[in-house]
Image 1 (spheres, rainbow, N blue to C red):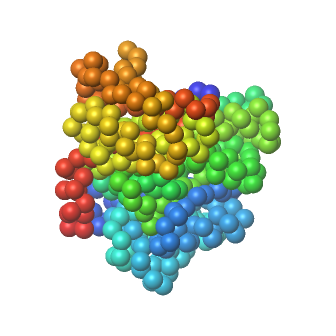
Image 2 (cartoon, rainbow, N blue to C red):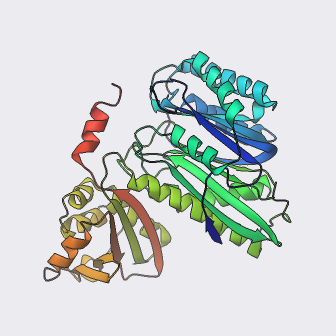
Length: 407
């Protein structure tokens, strides 16, 4: 696998655009388009929240029932959630407008929204935005960046990743973009993310790869414990690379899954590190767990803990808070038989071992927890299973952002 620059336009046959449409924000891009010159097989995962936004309901139907997809229209600022029949009608009108200007079927158009819940979309501006985007879409890296910037809300930076592999002597690319800063919690799939590939792969196999990889990437992040109404991951494969079709159980399928994992994990970590008000990415890796599920529960518990997150913000290597989070994870273990470390470029610094807090490494530990990336390693000494989860610190600014979110 080769890591390359770019995002949703890295794969052959995909174009993108970002533009200002004044949906809610002024003087900033707030609408994006992704378009494939060829029909795409689709895979997707969506929020587990019972309250689902209109775009989620629309996209689930397209992914499950349409023969193919060819375009995605995204707006930022207004979520089109809790908007009733009018909200669903606006999804339809958006798709109809895109179908008209792109010359594709209406049921090949997916839509996504992010922003304030409960507000109705200004559909006239949405339709005008679709037309504007169609006129400027391009297959360049810059066009992909414009799209990635246009889907941001409280994000402080755009998020893109891309990789290249070889299938049967043919170069195949996977690229993606995402947004997510608040209402992030591991329960699939707490953000908006769009991944494109020019691989030739069946819908069934693509769906299997996506659903499996989500469990180790987007489902392993948390910013604030809130699962959004709009969470969506869409993956589009247009076959433009014209590689020999990827088959299950082959080295080629493994290579594809590895590249997909790189893109998804990179985007997931970018979102965790860009949590609202965050100053640091918090990574927790659990090793030596008895089962895979135990490892995931333990890692998620640490990165989701408000006290651990506040500890990271305060640069206080308080191992007791980590032990507390492990202890209420729901996993049974002997606290007298585990080890906790902070990790850095120079190696591991123990902060808890075999039932005792280690105090003679306090200075080294404090230096590590003051970094922009804080790495916690937990050795359960119970088996061979491992899992990694990502979060961020909890700051005063998180409260400020969310106290003023609708204003």
